[in-house]
Length: 245
Image 1 (tube, rainbow, N blue to C red):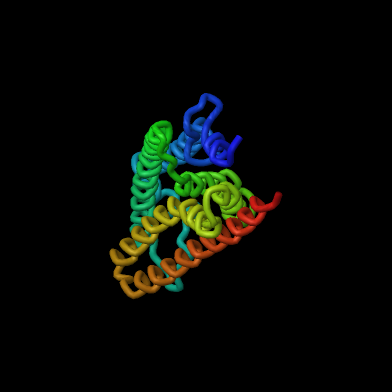
Image 2 (cartoon, rainbow, N blue to C red; image 1 turned 45 degrees about the vertical axis):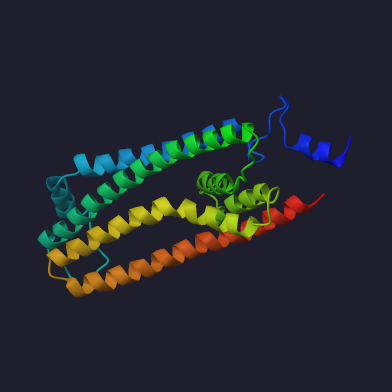
């Protein structure tokens, strides 16, 4: 068997058709799509609960009973002021969860469709790298292992390990997987921040709103950087492991 024949055989499945674009079989694409969609569904349910079930009367009762408090401010707030802030945060948070959840479900559907089309193209002789699929795999793994500290490193390592078979971009695929895993959280927190700033502005605390907004944006940037950094480190480790004989 010549080297060319061996290389050709390595790019084909057992049925003689060209292999899909990467080591992941097609059923894994569907599993990833379902897991992503389930995460989006949870977000939609949570957002719907905040938007349609939590009203100002419920919040007012919680504030009056002391079960809902605002402790982020240095200045003392009256119950009416606290109600305005909390109502704005809840409203914006609910909208953020809804939008994030719907976007996540659409992303899941788009991912499955794109991967299916990619495999169809591969069956016609075109081999397409699985860089994007490995990013998604790493991001989903990060979410699954989110109960473990430094989970973006785990997801990045898996993404880097898979990517090393196709290219030397294991570090970047790990970094992007970590960042992608953080996106739903970051998007939701941006809406929470928006609600907080609106609530503060309503009670004439514009200066505090700007200060709080700047502080939270800085924190979000740190979170995104940490997620990408851990993913990149994991990608490097995973790529090195994939090189081992």
